[in-house]
Length: 96
Ligand SMILES: [Zn+2]
Ligand SMILES: [Zn+2]
View (cartoon, helix red, strand yellow):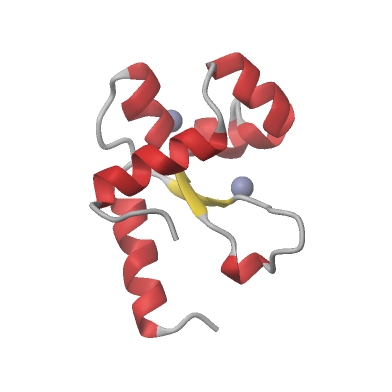
């Protein structure tokens, strides 16, 4: 179960909109879902999340779940870590 604070920060991330749309395509505030970045050895609940719209998350041909992380990063020319960094900058906090 997520704590109240965790939920709050997840809502805040989601409310930024899709980070790929805003940073790569220039569309601000696309309604987003949360994508968990899997890091080796990290439990899911502790893994960082990216805000991605359904199209870029799992529905679209260029989505991270369709292409896989490597294909996605290659297609868009940006890594998940970089997206995370920009997202955190938008949130006004440094990376955990
Ligand atoms: Zn998007
Ligand atoms: Zn996902």
